[in-house]
Image (cartoon, rainbow, N blue to C red):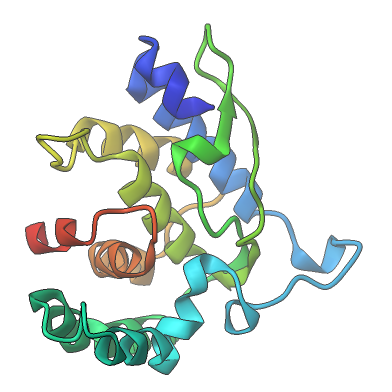
Length: 199
């Protein structure tokens, strides 16, 4: 797994650039060429983003005695509208999403750091490509604890790799990248929720 390759000393920027290139290639595949119809994010996948958008997760937070009075509950509720609006933005390119593109779901060569493939496709679906890139950024570009801050060198490597292909970000995607990173932090089960405070 790519996270282990980085832990073993391969330059994270090399790995992230390769992840970006290969994620862009993944996004360039036409869903129409798939042997079976790929579900949309409204039917599942993509970190269960549709469950968040419908308010199902908020309902669970509010109905649980351990979470309903927690500071995160009001923090989450205040930002839920942004999630609902952003995922429906007009003009966002749509296509196949991995849905959970963290480094532990990427296989990389342990010597070169080059990506060999993606695994754990249970969250795969069709949706806004920007969502997938944002999930990859929040899952791959933060420094480990205790720092837990955004590593801009890693983020730059990921984005340069992504944009080095024919899949170039549109002006709408560029303008909404940071909001989508916030949204990805809200819905990803693998990320410590309180990273959101940094945004």
